[in-house]
Length: 273
Length: 234
Ligand SMILES: Nc1ncnc2c1ncn2[C@@H]1O[C@H](COP(=O)(O)OP(=O)(O)OP(=O)(O)O)[C@@H](O)[C@H]1O
Ligand SMILES: [Mg+2]
View (spheres, chains in turn cyan, brown):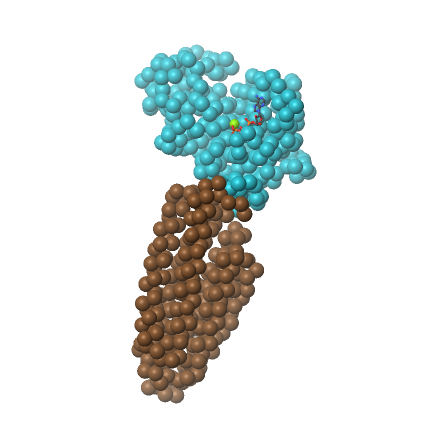
């Protein structure tokens, strides 16, 4: 990790985190992303801490989702997208061609803006990933994985009597927690969430936020959100993006009380930039 | 700084700071009038100052309501958050200044008009210094000027010196002529009130410093001042 830190401080456009408390889980170095000729991410370097929540904020179209997708190589699935730069996870470059993206995605779970349960039972929604990755042998073990994941996602009590009902029959907030349970089921190390609460009411949102806060003990979590209050509530670090660039990165508390950059201040206080 | 996209937000913040400046202006004139009432033994003016405290109280209530509304509805962040928190402090400090002026005016009603001139002159001098300090503090709020804020912090030492010498002087008079103890005690409390007003003006300057920079002024000086203050009261 020391080596990484050293490199980090030498990187020209890297943003400095205020407190370097937790170990670094994901170390992104000089990331560029192009869609065809259009550059969506420009030379972003960012170190994401383990066992903490990092929020990505910024105006629509600034590249938050694009950058998030770099972390589990989801951009590979977009034909026109080209990613350069290095992303180290625990020291290994995930963009290395030798890395199997499917395996990578089992280490890096993702939750999307719109809950997208598979058209299967609640049980199978959770069991799907562990089954593919051979994480459970036998029915009893799988039952345990399913129950544990649903418990961690705070959904167990609500669905334990209807595990065989379709996941799509749940409410939006329940579906989102189902998707989180599904992401957790494969025991990922990193969980990426792209606006996970944008379709939810305040109660469902509060439940997800509470869940995020609990998950933080075990996982490295990155959340994209348009709600400044949400970013302030759930994250320890905040990264502000603007037009494909990382403008400011630091302790959430500082960003929301005393940001360094005028652009950050203008954005979070709702001013014309 | 550019305007908010929601223009009502900018309007509300501006309205709030205009309100505070109005409060501050009232407080400033109350300081001068209270001491003039003492110096000229003008009981009418003293009663008027007592009455005016109510307007400051009302403005404070209004400011507080505006602040709660801003926090609840606008969720101020960063510089806006600091502006709103600072406004809350200012409102509290100015309200206290109003109370202290009122107390001076009330004590004025207890005087008999033949107090020793030197002490009365001292009160006048102190009130000029204090109202000047408050004026500067309000001005640095208006202009969000941290250099001026630092100057205001420095002025406080002077006012403390004023107070200390007035205290000693008055004590001497009291020892010489015990019949003057009653009225001179009032004068000492008036001076103490003025010294407190100076502290509130200092608080305002500190709040402005925080609003602009996001950092607290360092407390070392303030602390030593406070401990000295306690020594005098004993
Ligand atoms: N599949 C794609 N093909 C081409 N361009 C894309 C694609 N996805 C995103 N872009 C472009 O890349 C830029 C960044 O988009 P991205 O979705 O990362 O923004 P965002 O910050 O997540 O915005 P939002 O907050 O609206 O979700 C935008 O200009 C967008 O139009
Ligand atoms: Mg997006």
